[in-house]
Length: 310
Image 1 (cartoon, rainbow, N blue to C red):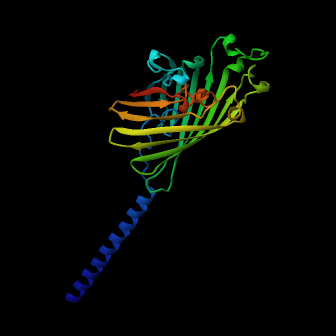
Image 2 (tube, rainbow, N blue to C red):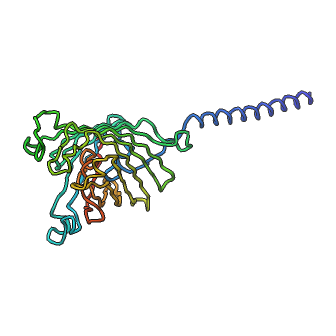
Image 3 (spheres, rainbow, N blue to C red):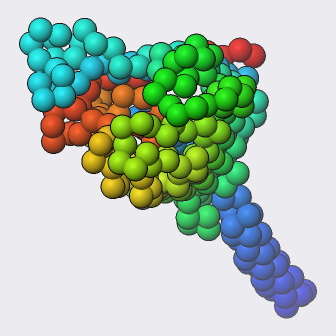
């Protein structure tokens, strides 16, 4: 009897160990299947001028006010008498972005420059995971713009233009590839294509050089977290355009923006400086004519407030 009890106890012990080993294997398998998504690569849907991979949460609305003042340096028209650009507003935009799902955002906005009205779409279709199974987040961004400006302003300075409604339209397509390297540093690249249905052949340019309807550009942006509520942010774009590289009559420059980000709970503030007058891609990608080196940088701010609509 004693031998039987010892045998049963030994079997029970072996079974218990086997069961624990089996459970550990199952738990390990579950952990590998349930991968954690990287959180808050960027704090808002934009870095400064550049889009980020972030989208508005489902059933939420992001109300955003973006402001650009005039150039600060005297060589670019600034100075004491206009309070270093504060009296000259370059551009202002008010926008409303809605979360259709956690990964899809649509929005509308209105800008001062060219009276632009735009509609945007953003879809974050890949998300970085903490185990690097997916090393980056990727979003697709589209923006369509219509300008309702007067016909005389639309064609001002051009050569023999015949009015077409389509001339008021322009578009931007963008792929946003971002990675959060650690809790303090995030970086992104933005290959970009801009199409404008109408471009001006300016009378004063050398040989009446024709601008390009299609412009390819590459952007980059980063965020460095300094404290719980403060971060340093910056973005930059380079347009691959021979017209903009070799145009002494109207020099063009790459838009560069630097600033700080402040989170106050319900609001996120961006205080920044940039040489771009325009706020949306359709404006600043192909029409930045101010240089940082000539004092053409402007103070600006972005204010974002998210409302839950559900």
